[in-house]
Length: 240
View 1 (tube, helix red, strand yellow):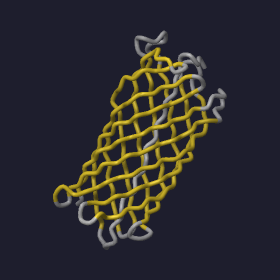
View 2 (view 1 turned 60 degrees about the vertical axis):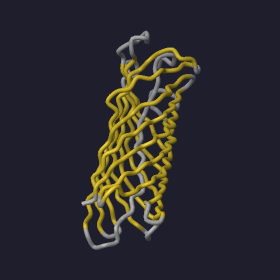
View 3 (view 1 turned 90 degrees about the vertical axis):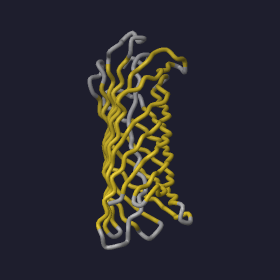
View 4 (view 1 turned 30 degrees about the horizontal axis):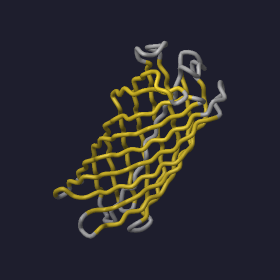
């Protein structure tokens, strides 16, 4: 691997707590959201840091104390500066895709637990400023996660909630030099959310999420990868 040229990025989608309804009815809640992400990825003596935006869709179904959630998020494109030894030197184009599904159970009116599976892939293309312009780097992770969350109503204004999750995943790194290398990924996700109604059955939510993930044990190189992402998300949902 050319440490002065190749920079690694990966993806994680945090699972947020969603309160289940106790009534014997099936509820379907589609949602759409936009995210602004501040990220920092580090590898060896270099890395990438900057900001990207993304858009996502999801749907949640609830029955009694159980719920299932499906979501996907994509960043069409974003241009940020790469760094080598903390000095700006090159530019890269980022493409990110995420999918996640989770199954949860409301222990009581305030606490929920969940398990799930997630997949994420980022493709980085070096731009004209790079000596290897046009070359691509890919890093994907997929695997299971487990977590818990809590939520409390604030008068009749809305619901404040939080979630915490731990993931254990398989990683795959790809570039023009190494071709592909398999490794392990693990880490934590923390989130807080405020959800409030706009009109009947129609709500907005604002959430802040923090991801800390670590990639290691690659079979073709010894370098470890670390990832920190702070996300601000605005969403809209409708309850059927």
